[in-house]
Length: 126
Image 1: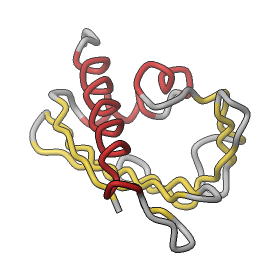
Image 2: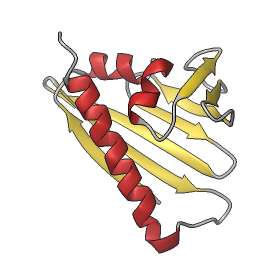
Image 3: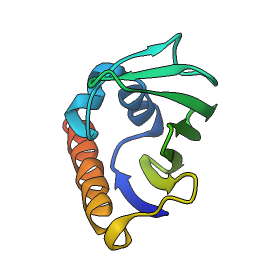
């Protein structure tokens, strides 16, 4: 399991709106999203830019999203204090799979993605 966390200096509503817009994912995540069918809800299908797919396993708006693929479960947890939003991301390899080098490469990619997300959202004018 790999986790990373970041504080975004914007309110949760703004972070959630940016996060749930598939067009924004290519700006910050490891790859973009083509679409989420039928939308951000349980059992929805996420179609990635490379034509692979995963499912929305669980979602509670503005609190948690769990994406499930053949090899990985990715959990995004949102929380807020004042006008700041904390986003914690956890990567869980499935079926007994592990991460090489204790996930050093994956963690570095995750930290980089969250830094990009923070920058993208904090540059948005209110």
